[in-house]
Image (cartoon, rainbow, N blue to C red; front, side, top):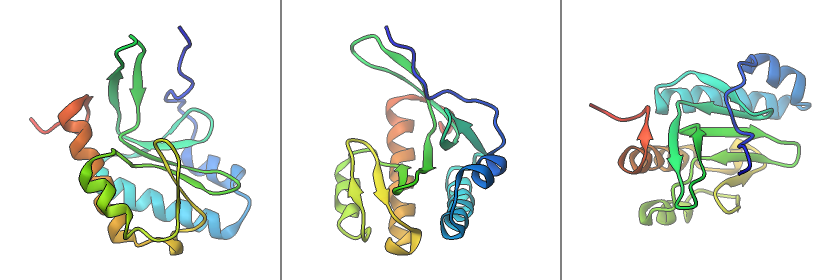
Length: 145
């Protein structure tokens, strides 16, 4: 079985942004996303894999037997667009997407060019909905005892 590449790495998040991100706009948006996701999740930013900044973690296990850990919320400041890992696929999330703004949808992530293209309050709702979903369906650091 293939080993997942998305693991906590211990790399410094600020160092990563300063060395990896090549535009000031994307750096500013990256630092703003860190502030927002840290506030919404309650977790410090950590590097997952070579390019994902994640907040908190949960453990997943698929019917195939594949299992691993992933960040509760996360993003990657890729060259073409930000990849936002904040989507849970719930009915509420589907409805929220209609008001998010300018984005493209991948299988499980949302791609945006810059933060000003989207409504931050809708992004917050998407993130909070994702946290609720993960809390209900997975072994999650977000679980409220």
